Length: 68
Image (cartoon, rainbow, N blue to C red):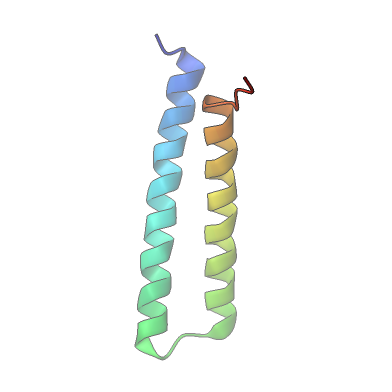
């Protein structure tokens, strides 16, 4: 049975996945438009990377490495 903290972390994880996907879509649209500001693209990519790091951190908390 999941604890309340696990449920909250999984909900946070779900939200982060959505944000990551949305940023990916926004970056793709900017790149395809040909009118993208390089600085804005860099900021979006940095935000996306930060979200990816948060996702990895939460996943590691939920599924710790088991050394057997």
